[in-house]
Image 1 (tube, rainbow, N blue to C red):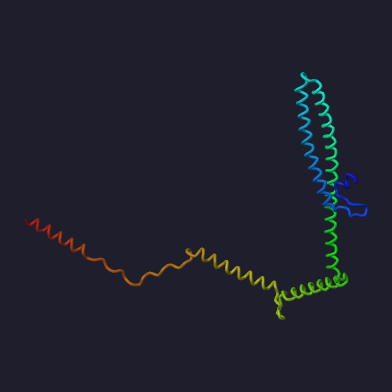
Image 2: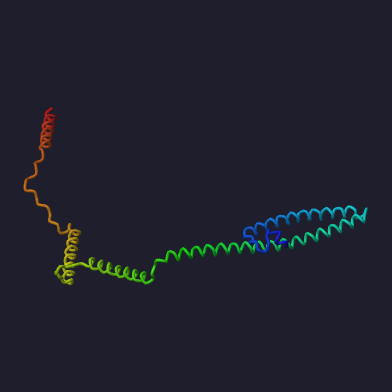
Length: 221
């Protein structure tokens, strides 16, 4: 069985292929596995590097062996990087294909629903219906215009005469207002009272007589 057959779990020649969701899940699991492998190799590379540094002057053979192992790990790491890039590209392509499939499926469902909705509709009947609606709207507008138009019941008046009469009424009102404003100059004076004023009390004269009597009494003394 091929590598992709193992990854996707495919059967024989006559077997049904995996769905897009199953393939995407398998690719994600493979990515996780390779990512863990990467982390392991990175740690091994760091360990071999430390061994080479430690034995560089003391044990040259051990240092060389450590560097060889480091090179092998780095080669494996590079291969895993390339494999991850390929798997990631394939997973993204599958996800896009799956999205397009769902979109097309939904669009097909909507198209069927629209077809079902229009199944009992006749375009000629729709045109006739819209024409009837337009005619009725125009008729309703004509009726509204006719009702709102003022009716004189045979009475006809000269508009110029009515305007002239209105001007006269306005002028009379204006003259009346002007007379009210300038009223004090032309207003009639009040009438002189016909009854005589009451006479002034004679108390002052009595006081003068008393003073004269008092003065004469003083001179006689």
